[in-house]
Length: 102
Figure 1 (cartoon, rainbow, N blue to C red):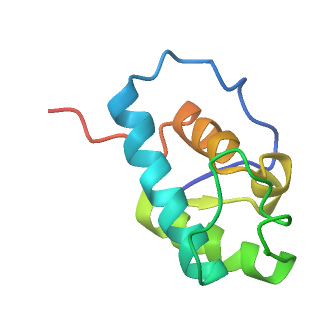
Figure 2 (figure 1 turned 180 degrees about the horizontal axis):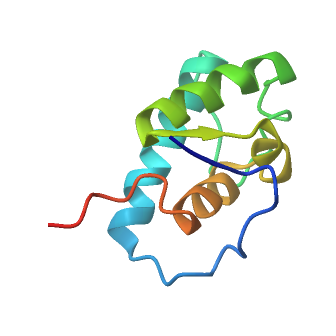
């Protein structure tokens, strides 16, 4: 299993990810936030904590995202990227949800 997030993240624009990949990752991130927060009244640029989140929920979110991506995600990654858009770009920069090559 891969492991990333504890030693930093590439810049959000690194890698030239296409819109479909970002949309797929964003959908995963939004779904986990909505499950954890028990609501979906947040924007993609809203801070998790301002949307009603707390640190205990982060472990669940990152465990679920990591399981879906097939990798272990550092909690630090979330703290460094506390919005849907920031976390989406960080995960996409590492290819966390990239489809296997055909």
